[in-house]
Amino acid sequence: MDQELNPQTDQALNELAMLICQALENDGEMLVERQDGLLKTLVMSGHTWKSERTVMEEVERRVKDQCGESAMHRGGALTSLTSQMGVKLQSLARWESKSPSEGTPSKPANISSATDA
Image (cartoon, rainbow, N blue to C red; front, side, top):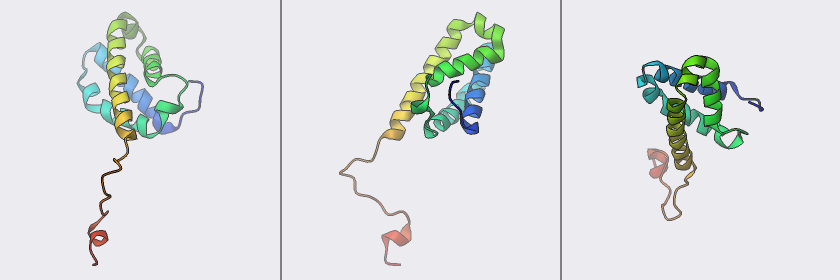
């Protein structure tokens, strides 16, 4: 990638690539279990808007580097997995960017804020 990544973002991208490699080889169960947390890490780090490449382009590049042969022979499956993950990432990013509506009053942070105690 052309830009410097923080270690947490780099690790999340590497873990996503590793999970996709495992899914391509035989077992996609870990991908389903872990992907949401890793995608949320990328959203919270701001990587989805700072990146010169899309997150899924970067993950796909890393998958090809990490598991070479199986990624090359299963290109359609790789594209499908990264596409599904990209949709989920966009959904998370949209959800995280929504602010509370103007008409909703704020709520107290804790019980002492809500009372005179």
